[in-house]
Amino acid sequence: MMNLPRQCRLLVHHSDATTGCSRWSVAVVGSLLFGLGLGLAGCVHPASFNTAIDMQRLRASKEGTARSVKGIRAIEGSGFSALECPKRAYVLADLNRIAEAGSAELTSAIPDQAEPLRAFVRSSYPRPAAVVVPYECFSRNGLVPSPVVDEFLSDVTSLYNQLSREPTIIIELNVKSNPSDGSYVLRSIHTDVGKVENTTNSTAKIYRGIYNFSMTRSGFKPGRLEGVNFVNSTPRLIECQLKSIEDSDDSTCQYR
Image (cartoon, rainbow, N blue to C red; front, side, top):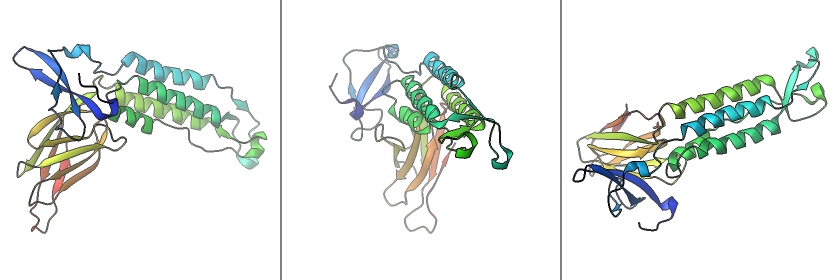
């Protein structure tokens, strides 16, 4: 296999109709079309590669975060009504440390090659809201009320649910344009790794994540979509209606 830095390569799946099995190839990001590449010697079964989220580790990360939060000692107060003080508060720094550890654990459940998805998790992992309790309530700073803790745990569960709907790290994307023969580019909004370039009326296999999409065709106005959510691993379709550069209307793209 060609020895490339991890940040300069991605794994792309090809079916091998001649042998009835599958192989994987290494494609140079940004210089080769997604789906082309430098074939590996021989035919390698995809099971040899880690192409799925470690669901057991994912679940353990969520449960571990909940246990860590419950293990924090709450600071009890008298709930002074004049200051609207809560009866219970938590140290924000403790919660932030738990969030950092939880983000790292959740990310580690995703294979290294799926950097667009890993970057999404690092960027989207919840952080406790800095709703600071007045100093006078407990005679100390850096405390947050218990509803902040409840909201944090709820947001962690929401992120977990997004990731756990399907174990796969790869989805199929269909892109169509009218007229046909447009060229498109997909770029993750969270990382420079994993840029995808292809032509329309084709299917590409991409890593789950959040992407910006752009389409061009000579003589036509470009079409764009920003922040397209490919985290949910169901089949996806982008269709673009391209308008001539002489047309008063702009090109439009829709995501389904």
